[in-house]
Length: 276
Length: 276
Image (cartoon, rainbow over all chains, first blue to last red):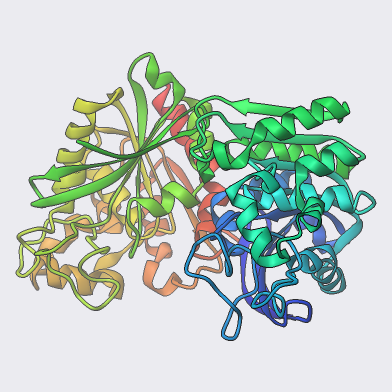
């Protein structure tokens, strides 16, 4: 684990670290905010998964999350969105390859050797952080934005024993029915659509749901509504009687101005579950 | 006035606009956050001046100020830090030329034709904003970071009738005695040091002070303490019996993690003066 930077922030420390990822077979960078309370022992942790084109840095610098994490004594993890570096496959489109890992394990070439973001977030990074920092693996929650909202929802529904709560900002809600999904799943997972279903939040909501509260915020003026398909997830949540809240926020778009406006609500939501 | 973007944010609008600046003889871009209350009439305004290498964008995306401005019903202006564009002089050093206007009117070539950031912030931009948006020119306050803290303090002490309150984050406090100052004043104003004194917050504090409260925050682990010279300003404030607060914040550095940690205090400080 290499320390890239550490900055005092809201009484705690905003760090950036890198480590050799075995599953992605490359060096991976992540951000970790530790509140002051981590000086005295393990603290709960909220994972924040980012969207297309993002690195570990976007949410760390633009979401304004640290203020509220500090208030509630919660750590924040900001993983990168894909493997990177020389020798890692890439594509000229912004929504495929580096910066667009989609939180799956690729089985198809040229992606299969490095693009294993599912295993990275599901197992490798949490184990690495647990070994190196004062976080409490028994108290985890997860959120994310856009592609990261997709990742948060799908991981939470597959790992209910790990996560006490899940939320999302403008998630890619039904990727098997969207050009944000079909294109990437074809490339990473191949043309057998049966393999895609495990990575579609709407399908997972219909099939299993989440054992806890779910919070979804979606901007009503989001420029990507046709690709996000929030109505599919809203319908599935209601049909399942999933405990939780789905909100349309009038006038808000897909930007970090939307995320930062509602991050206080999301952190309070997770804090209630993490400290229960 | 051209609209570059507008995003819903904390119930208000974070806009980015550009206009033809006469004093800088180029197109200038700025950010403006208007809280929801601006839909009903003029609101107070807090100016935020940025530091070396910044554009209008850095504080707008990284300081987390909108949350607290919205809470207090206050507008925020984020000006650029220099003229820019083709035909505008520049220098290979990061701390001279574009991105480093230092809030003065240059009298020396090659800077004199465009570098008039003093007149731009003191007169032209406030008049342009007053004409186009619902802000109340009778209720203005100013803050800034680093070079922008220098700008905020010097402008406030020269325009006490305009600003009800002034604060700064890690300001360049004594530029006539620092390599962040002597180099730029030589280039922009020439070698007659008498012309520099009007742009040194410590000298102005000794000579006139500010008619109102002053709030200064300085990180105790700032990597630029030798260039900022906070001790000179602290001594001058105390010697003058200047009403206000000077704080050393242990462990904090010069980054936006420092700014975002203390922005809530600063906005509350200004709100008290603006709504008095």
